[in-house]
Amino acid sequence: MKVLLVLVAVLALSGEAVNDETFRGRLNSRGTQVVENMMRSMIRRVNDLIKQHTRLNNMRIGPVNVEGFRVRTLDTANVNIIMDRNRLGVKLNNGRVHLTAQLAVYINVLFGHIRVAGQFDTYGDAINAQLDTGLSVSGGRFRSQGMGCNLHVGRPRVDLHLPIINHLANMILQGLMPHVTRAVCTGVKKYGDGMVNSVFQSVPTNINVLNLFRLEFPVRNFRSWSRHMVAGVGMEVRPVNNQGVNFSGIRRLALPEAEDGHHACASVSDFVANTASRTFLPVGKSFSVDVGSILKQFFGSIFNDKVFVQGTLTKSPTFLAEPQEFHFSVAASGRILDKDGNVVPGTETDPIEVIVRAPNNENPMFSNVKIEVKGPIAINVNLNLSSLVDMLLKFIDDAFRGKGQVAMQKRASNADIVRAINEMFLGRLFSGVRLAMSTRHGAVIVCLSGNPTAHATNIVYNALRRSFG
Image 1 (cartoon, rainbow, N blue to C red):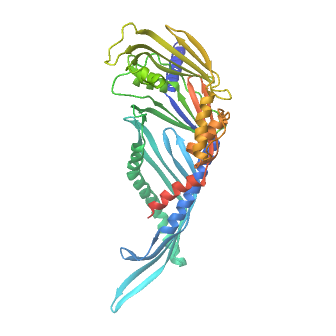
Image 2: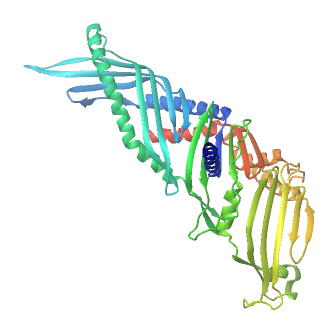
Image 3: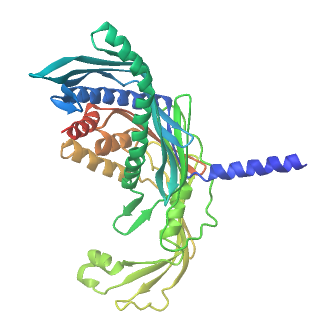
């Protein structure tokens, strides 16, 4: 019996831990490969920059004059992503380096000095390194919990072009190399945390909604995981404001796993939308609409009175994601106000609830939207809103294609919406974009596939090149 109770408690705690996640991002195997290939390509270009710009001439280090120094070979492009157990980073395998320096030492003698000079070549093969950082959450933001650094040079050697001296120099190098790699990692750990935290501080955690209010989304907990070239992160985010919010009654379901057919997927719980609604549009919040101005548009000078319709929320807007369908509902009571803000007698109404159901698996989309009105009036209608989507997509086509007037045609399909998003946001950055959206019980899943274009890589490359001066 005790064993059964312990098992039930463990399952309950594990279920609660899973439910803590309201957002989950997943990089599938093909997406991981694309990211790593992009990283390798970028690192090769950075290596070329280092070889091109890392040159020294006539620098003095103690008694030694460095008359010339350059990087001849630098191969560090065999990298892999690390994303596991709240540690993020990269791993380098089988790197190679070849450095050349022209060194000279001047020895003072009676009538002047003697110059002893030569070329000093340093090689490193089978270089394996790992650089990662532990992540924690503090004050609603990510924070580095300590840099991890591991550097190993498998076959370090020097060539002074004199066999006897080479042997002695390589004996010394073998003894010095562990101290050198430790010193490098010590420097990385010393400055790495500050660099990572400065990046995290610059990542916004709020959204300005139409200049009406700001949604703050602090991160409450975080985890990362990886297996078989699939990596993911999960976190709990919920909006906050300066007042306490009652979250009771908002469903909070475990996030489903996304499928593997795309490069990357994100799952968002409807708990996020509903907590945002409860936070900024709570029960009792009032709003008003200037109906007089609207009526004047239709009736002109016949209707000159200022009339306002004021509503008070009796139920916060609720968004529910169900299999292949969106549900939305809101309820409010209403009254009419005169130009002085007084309630017109006899105009107060009992709460009216509006319920909208919109399947998202139809083509064209939103062609069968069901609207139900409950309360003092009861209405049930089916609307075809695909024409509205057509109009919006037509505006996007006209703006981004520059074709002027285009004959109206049905565009409210998944493929056309993907095309519109690609035109607005992704077209210059990714090629072969595929976008898919689906709903499960309690979550919306958005998946994306696409290959970075030359324009996208050039943006990063040019920023790196500018940093070299």
